[in-house]
Length: 218
Image (cartoon, rainbow, N blue to C red; front, side, top):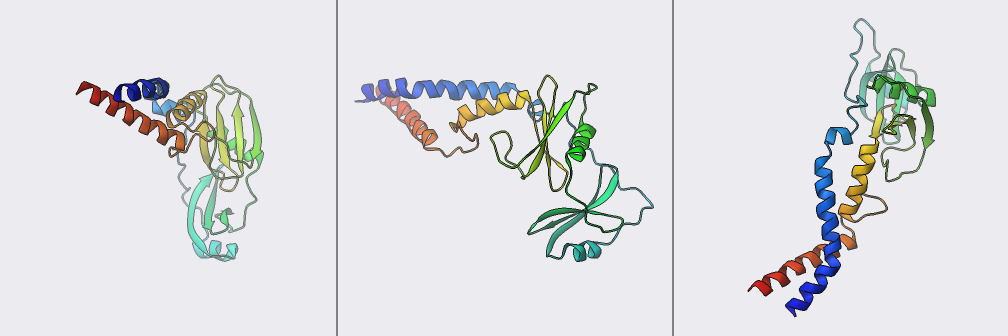
């Protein structure tokens, strides 16, 4: 019984074991900073608020929202100070000098945000699209602006349509890593669920394969 079990499990589970080992090894060889696109896009740079500029107090922002606020933060955005207010209904931007509500970021502003974070000396053309559906490539805040660069890495920068912040960066290296990740966790559709019945079944099959081999050795 141990011999037959070990043989059939080796045939059935062996292919997935090869994919597990191969995908794990290949993902380990890919530098994580290149996967994140840090060599192309600078998402960590923070512009300081200018000195001598009078900013409205948080109470003005609270009054302007008309709803309960969780947080209020001040930052620079496209060369102007803004106040970012997070509420139960979502996040909105206000002019930090006047307290006026700002309109949602436009396609041109999303492109400006992506251009400002672009690190390469090349300046490829871009295409900007508004997306409102999650996909394996992007599962962040929706809607969002997708800024696609015509560079060799086919870089895509996703800018949140409510805050104007960069929500994600996707490159050719990231897509390769994500493909191996989908093979590794056996979620070929969404690339995020590592509790799939397939993964559980093959993991138990791998355990049975080891147990069968151990019995044969004894």
